[in-house]
Length: 203
Image 1 (spheres, rainbow, N blue to C red):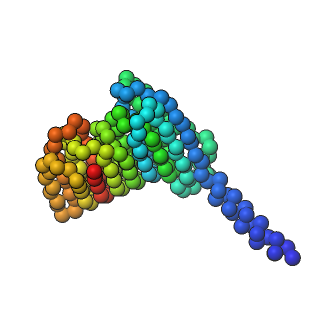
Image 2: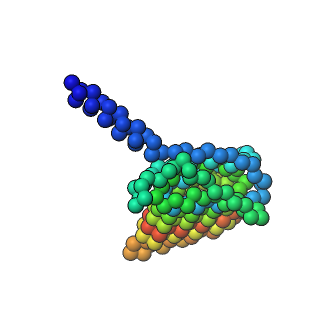
Image 3: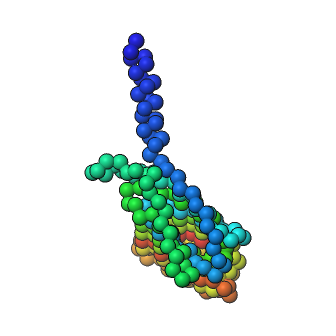
């Protein structure tokens, strides 16, 4: 009789324990049109969407990656660190034991800098200059611009691809890596550097 009740109870406890291992941070703050945004964190995913607005909207899901020597991480105690110097806004959560999934909605007028240790970056409707650096992972950019002044894509181990731009491009492939350079008549610059992984930029 006890076993009939014990199994559902134990499953419920396990589900609750798993459910408590995520935490979401949501913030929104206004910006000026001449500012730039820099995002940096160790492990996870970054999804960026641009729009015609005047505020940055950030939604971050935290998930414990592994249990450390001192027990589980208190995800609810983790805060988004925001710094501002001159015209640059810097956002980070420097927690290596936590996997982070960022969803960022930012004004199209902002220059973007992003640095990710391990993980993937996806950017939709990019309409400004950007500098992207990833240690291990893939970068996909859907450009909202028809042309750039320059594009430089470099993967140490992986492929680089640039599609649907009318300017002059040069693609070089090594034994394991790839480099794509482009010159056009646009206003902005795009630079993406990946240690291990693929880069794809399309319009």
